[in-house]
Amino acid sequence: QSALTQPASMSGSPGQSITISCTGTSSDVGGYSYVSWYQQYSGKAPKLMIYDVSNRPSGVSNRFSGSKSGNTASLTISGLQAEDEADYYCSSYTSSTTVIFGGGTKLTVL
Amino acid sequence: EVQLVESGGGVVRPGGSLRLSCAASGFSLDDYGMSWVRQAPGKGLEWVSSINWNGGNIGYADSVKGRFTISRDKAKNSLYLQMNSLRAEDTALYHCARGAVAGRWAYGTDVWGQGTTVIVSS
Image (cartoon, rainbow over all chains, first blue to last red; front, side, top):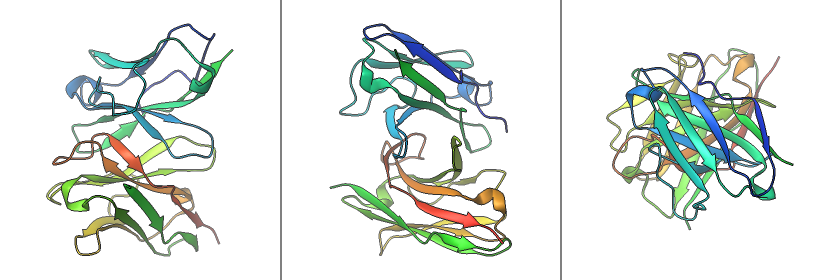
């Protein structure tokens, strides 16, 4: 199964809002409310930022929000900060009882 | 403190086997779905396998199906990944991770170990 489609890189200035997209199919993103988003700094384990499309784990800043429309999920980061510079991955449950990740988006804060 | 610690990685020849372990502390493995996720050097995250909170539902990536087996030991509060017929493309850092919500599959994972490195090379 092919990976979910994310932009390879994005950039934004401090204070701005950015939205990272994650496109799949009706067999994964579009078919289930089980989309998650992870933040990963170089050399570190991933950190869960959003689960079940739009739920934030305890301790995650409310500047991070998630949504879904059809086969595309989105992660929005508002009030961009330097510490948000990292790689971001989406994932989704699939109809084959598997999980699929996106290819990752490298976010640069200018 | 909730924690996951992986072990068992190493260097193995193509065709060989390894068994990864993931020791959980601060929570009961039986209450959560668990996953193995790997990351090859310089590459993105790749899901490997997951097991339901009660062990009744297991899934594998196509790339490892038939070669890898996920299991758990309630008494040791540990998760395992038996890896057979290893290939060069299995070389990666392997993380175990806990499902974000108790009592279901690991749809999203909120606790991650630091990982154990597997290198498959002749």
